[in-house]
Length: 212
Image 1 (tube, helix red, strand yellow):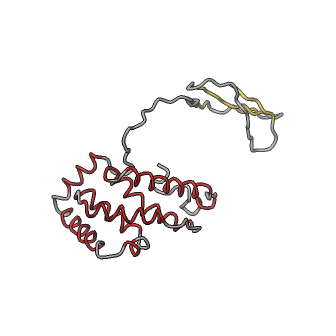
Image 2: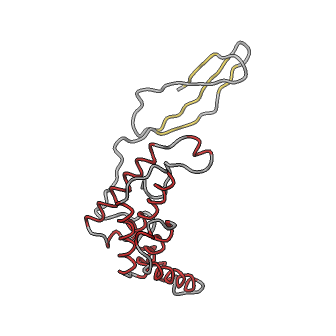
Image 3: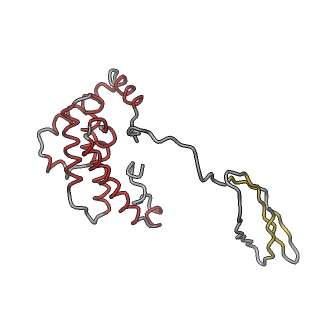
C-alpha cells in the first residue's frame, strides 16, 4: 500500500504501522513523500509475513551442533592421509598427556584442552578419552556459578564438546546435568547482552553452541 507523508527538510522519514496482515503472505510496499515543491515516491520493496505454525520435525536423538555422523566418517578417512596423519598424531599425544593430570587441574586449563580430549575420544572411539572428557565436563558443571562473563564462556567451552560430540556415550543423568548447566549459562549470558559488546566484536549473546 502507498503511504503519503508531508515533510520539510532534506530527510524524509516514514513510520507506518501495518495491521491485520495475513500470515505467510507476500506484500509489496512503497512510500510517497511530498512538500510544497517536491514530491518523491520510493521504489517498491517486498516482504513476506512469517508463518506462525512452521513445519518442523523434532529429532528423537541428539542433533549434533558441530559434527554429524558424516563429518566424523570424513575426518576418520582424512587422518589416514598426510599431512593429517601427523596432525592427528599430535592430538592423540596431547590427549594421552591429559590422563596424567588431575581433574581439578583440568577444569582450570584452557577450554580447548578438554575439547581436544573429547575430539580424540570421538574420532578414535576411545572410551578412556571419552570418560575423562566427560568427567572434566561434569566437574565443571558442579562448580558454583561464577559472576565473570568470560569464565562462564570458558565453562561452556569446557562442557559443550563433551555434551555434543560424546552424547551417545553419556548416561541419561549425565545428559541432564550438562544440558541443564549449559542452558543456565546461556540464559545468564543472554540477560547480560548489551549493545557495546556487538560494537567490539563479541557478545554474551553469541556463545558458540550454547544457544543451539
